[in-house]
Amino acid sequence: MEGRSKNKSIAIVGGGPAAMMLACSLDSRKFNIAVYEKNAALGRKFLVAGKGGFNLTHSEALELLTNRYHPKEFMAPFLNQFTNVDFRNWLQTLGIETYIGTSKRVFPKKEMKPIEVLNAIEAALKKNQVDIHFNHIWKGWQNDELLFEHQQSNLTLKTDIVVFALGGGSWKVTGSDGSWLSYFNDKHILTLLFVPSNCGYQINWNKDLLKLVEGNALKNCIFTCGQMAKKGEATITQFGIEGSGIYALSKSIREQLLLDNKASITIDFKPELSELQIQQRLEDNSHLTIKDILEKKLNLTTTQIQLLKFATNKEQYHSPAILSNLIKAYPLTITDFAPIDEAISTVGGIALSEINERLELNKLPNHYCMGGMLDWDAPTGGYLLQACFSMGYSLAKYLNEK
Image (tube, rainbow, N blue to C red; front, side, top):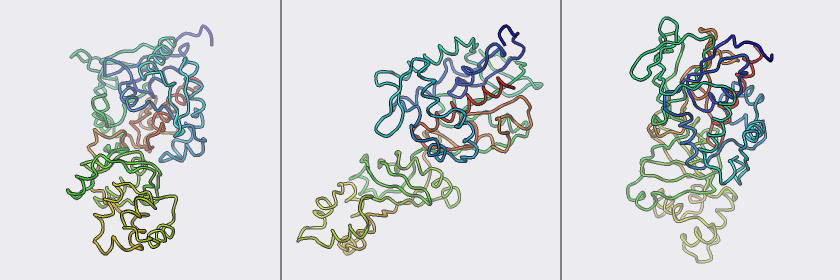
């Protein structure tokens, strides 16, 4: 195709991970590629995600990786086309070396900062002759042309192909505010209100208990909600509870909250011991106090012991059967989500029934949607970014070959 004229224009609305991957992967000999970003820089959410340790993807086998997504049937084709191994190899071509941490998560080499990763991707965009237009806020359509607000003026754009990568509804400071939902509703495209995912959850703690345990972590526990379980950790907060062990249960917690305005979770404080083994240690007390047994024979933390105390009366606290059951399945009731703006990600947005397998809107030919603006879910741990990069690559591959 060398020397072929650029006979198609493509506008990418949004400048996050999915958009950047698409723009890097499109054939610039075939397309005039332009990105329209509402902020003054690309990848704002990408950089915010890097503040807590820049987890790019996860190293687990593809089948396991795919099972982390809901619905996995939607995400599987994109992951198959651009796997976590492909992602690492692509980053390496940009000069971004990665390593696998002890959690099997993938990070850029230790001395590399998030902005350096972003700069490398921006260099790839420049090499691919991508035009980037900053401070362009998409405001819907006008006479079937894209309408943007730029420098307090409105302008319209006619283009052959449009790809929306507008992000979800969390972290408004980065530009992902979900304000675009109404524009799709006006086109009779089904949208779903955004709901928090991978967020903290409200628990109505006893005030006296909270004074003793607030800010403390529950580590190496198994957290369960419905049919979902995750080994990890979580931190007790004044609002409730948050952390990787809880984030992974978001789908089940969300379903229960939306149905009953509450959700039930349990925590296994000692996953390596059975309930019977715990009960036997409690019964074989050798004249030790219950507190000594819990600390010395079961290695429970002060926080776990306080939780047990406040969940029992004196008689129950001294009952090996009751206490062993509580240690293996400590119950908590969740009463609400954290505010959506504090969530790491969201579900909702464009209903998956509105797009085909190529991410094209059924009701708007040559208009595509991808990334966090679609109604899918995944836990933290690199899965969110991997999905966005996989969708961007897969769509580019399809358009290049179309």
